[in-house]
Image (cartoon, rainbow, N blue to C red):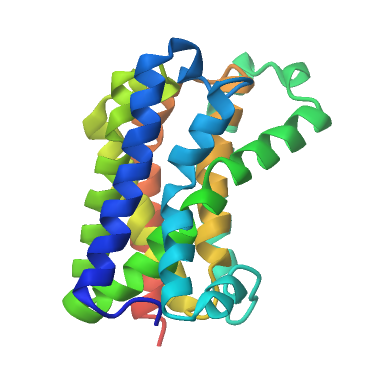
Length: 253
């Protein structure tokens, strides 16, 4: 366990929000930094996006458990049933491709652009967040509040951590915040369930987070749906994925 005391938990939360709010303050002060593409936006966005993982690493260093935390990133123990959750998560995007196939612009997504999209979203997404949210925060809260309490708590914190994006010129600003919160709750249940299937690995959370982000980017790139419409259209699908993941985890026997 990387943090056990209340003071360490508060240190993680305060540190994470302080780093991200500092970055968002710079984005407000420097309009050119409101996009992660190029200078000066990229380094500022990296501070914001990586604040959960940076604080998780800091807290793990304090408890001399950094090796244990990092080893979970590439551990493949217990991933068997997780692939079904990943497959169904990809299915939401596949349904969108089939449903809106007549308006898809396939030439806009070259193999090199797709690989860039995956790499960009991996670095500015799950790698920067999941050491903190699912690697450190979820287990620490689960000891205190149980699985559901921890999952709901993480979902609320995760949504609040994203909230400043609605005050800058970001793609998220187009999404109704309530719809975004539905996604965050569904994602949290799905990733917490998958992490329960493979408790020694962070790969389920990292891969699922990557699927969610890449799917959102691809539907826009292919011209299937705009960001706001995608989040509204796909919300019921991701709720179904969350229910499936929960049932698979807790009723598989």
